[in-house]
Image 1 (tube, rainbow, N blue to C red):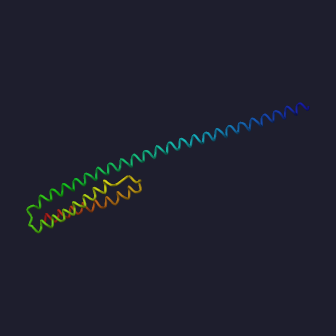
Image 2: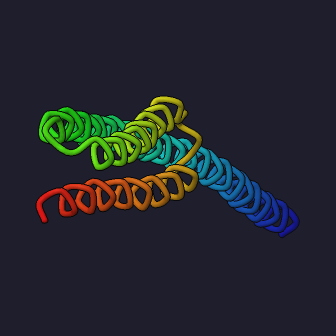
Image 3: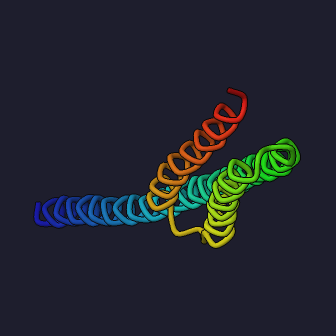
Length: 152
């Protein structure tokens, strides 16, 4: 009888040790799995960040190209307007020349502002782009106003 108790106690101890070992190992596996999942999440986040940065840089490059085209068009408008005013009266011609000089300066300032912009983060980019678009729209309107006055 005493041997049965020892065997039962031994079996219970073995079962208990096996359970504890299994729980410990499954806990380790779970922690290892958590680490692996965290690594995967970091990799995915890094890829997302790389893609976002690439899109951001592409947007800036495209915007720079579009802006350069607008500035070049403004320069062309100035050159054409200078040709048209050659036959104006001296006083009108001087007035137009002054307005053209102001527009040329604003156009150059806009080009410099765009050239000097450094990628400073998406929030700063959005703010810069909003202000720049506003300034370009005003410059475009100033060109239209100047040519409208000339055609009257």
